[in-house]
Structure formats: structure tokens, C-alpha cells
Amino acid sequence: METAQYDLMRHFADSWGLVYMLAIFLAVVFFTLKPGARGNALEAARIPLDDDLPRTNAGNTNAGNTNAGNTNAGLGDRK
Image: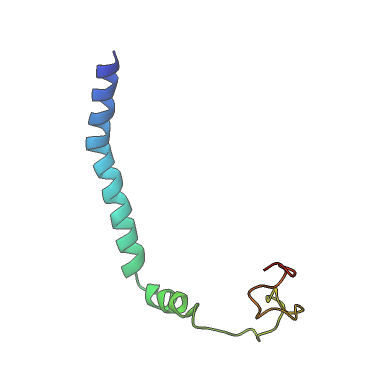
């Protein structure tokens, strides 16, 4: 019985798996090449380069630490 189930699943994957992958490929190509997609693609491409927020120390975890540059900070007097 296990062999019959394996053969059935393999046949399903061979036939419908190919159709599924082809449909995904065609959807990606369509959404990439459809009219109006160029503006969205250019906008998405600029996201890493846009720096519209001012830099602050809010994200810096060492902002209040006077030993921020010291690699031995927090180790005490161990030598």
C-alpha cells in the first residue's frame, strides 16, 4: 500500500507541481512587466538609499556608556 501512495504522490507532483510552478513564474513575470510596475519597482529600489529620518542616539545602545569604545568594558579588573 505504501508504494501505491508514493506512486500517486509522485504522479501528482510530476504533473500538477509543474503546472503550479509555471503559474507562479507567469504571475511573477506579469506583475513585473505590467504597466505601472516601473514606478513601484523604482520606489522599492530607493528604500535602502533614502535616509529621511535624522540620526539620533536613540538606536545606539552605548549612548550613555562611557566605556563604549573599550572592548573590555564590564569585565572589571580581571586580567
